[in-house]
Image (tube, rainbow over all chains, first blue to last red; front, side, top):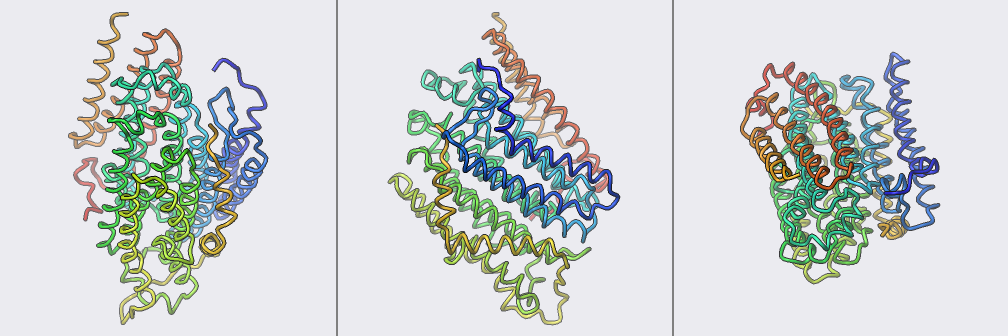
Length: 492
Length: 100
């Protein structure tokens, strides 16, 4: 806290600063060109450069943990790995959005800049070393995503979804800042590590406990754990489809990144982990409820977007299982990181196909409209099949391997065994509804019904192909990604 | 200095009023006001603790929250305007296009 920051700190924050600057470049480009037709690829290009920069930082980082800006930002491989997930999600989203926005003709040119700025917020959340950065990052991300959800202003569902998401999100940030205020009152600091080091003196302190639970509740809201999930189906269904994928992938990853950071710092005290006020018992219940409720409600959906929304709730439950395992098993986030990576790519790919199947004035998100798609569009149907198998956790895909690794690492602790069994049962249940689109595409005859006629968009095809290849490769040869995730430790 | 407890209780009451307002009021604008009340309760708590501890960290945080609340209000009101244009109402109960 005492040391002033150095100019060199700016170079260590280069990935974040670069994306923020690129967002300005996109904004300027939109101001100077009357057509917005090149902004999607332009934004995607920026994300590619961002990925290269972040990848370089990941390899070149010498210490396990660097404090930048006198401890405000933390640079460790864990946060850099998260950055790569955000950038990859942003890249795929801006490619998907490019085709979708052109087809439906709704968004203003700021659309892509807001995507980039939300990514900046997420990166800040991943790097946060102080609650001030947590709040700023979270709000930067959320305000961007609220407006992206509501950006299709001609569509009633979109504005309604935006409003619902905004009100719930604003309440969550109210709880977050009030919780932080209580933590500050109890410990006299907003720095995560300082709070952690002073935690032992506050074991029975009601201020401290209430503060922790308020922060936890706000994060649980962002990742849509079950009692805090009410907004998810509506916001996901009403949002423009590429943004739904962005929310499911990137916003969820950012929330879990912060949650992992929190469980490895402020929640990590032994008494909090195992004592009578242990958050682990509560997290255990939330995880079980989340996966079960998400899966059971997904079973009866006929709208693919809504089905995938409930599926994303279920996946939050599985990831929560991994988060609980982190402090129990000695702060190894590799299983969560790998799962987040594959889930982000898979879900953006799946929503990419959903976006691709729609035409102007006909979004075709109903399962019955997908009948016979397999025969007419074999490539897209194959991609969707890969994504669905991956979400369901069926072998040759990324989802299988990541889920296996997550469950296997969680089983290292006997107290989590029951939860792993419940998660495995849930995975089996989930296969029923992930097979529904596949059955509709391949085995259902369209008859004389009007069926989906997909749009033509090269950037959307590129995004779907890229996502499908990544999902397939992560499933077939997971070695290098796994190695990278294992090396991405949380700086102590 | 003996005001700390009173301030904290006052802030907690404000926060609870905000939460209740969000839950029971049907007008979106009043819901937004209630959210602002929650944020201001956090501000007041920060200021009170900052005064009790005699450091400025809480003041800094409060300024940050004020700025964020302004940004949030700007985005929120823009969304309310968009919703009013498409739905012709700001009553929360009327927003049920997607209820199953």
